[in-house]
Image (cartoon, rainbow, N blue to C red; front, side, top):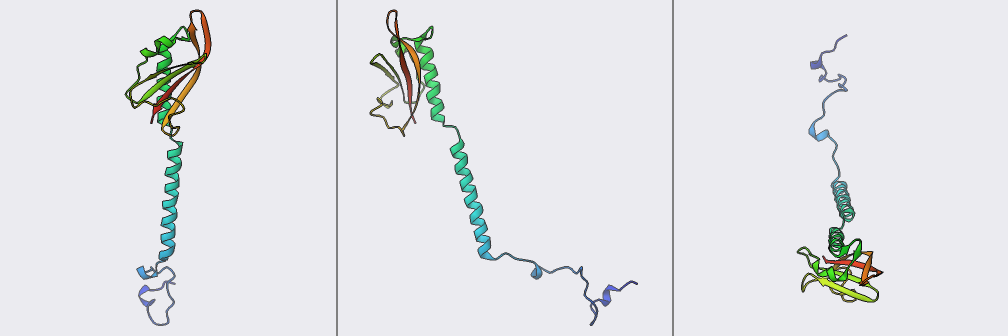
Length: 154
């Protein structure tokens, strides 16, 4: 039994359940709900960007580590740091200071007038510091433990 589609619009004819919807029949989102959804997505992206920035490595810490490695290579002979060789430390273009402390003495080499000052003067938020324990030659045949420190201005 086949039914003619042209007769479906006739009065008293049953409606076709597969009839197409017009644009006015489509569902719509309330404006307030749409604004809330956009704000939630924006907030989520902002939080994600902040977390991603916090997870990024601290480049100034890497610079301090690199400077410390250079300073140790320049000052050490046979694994023992010689304070007299501190002036041979070549510091890259950043404002940097290399400190050596051992046996109650302190030696300092700075890259210029903008270099970070001694620990009591410098601001912890403004510098990256990297340090390691080394053996220091304080006199012929006399070695003590000391600290080699690189301080880089951020």
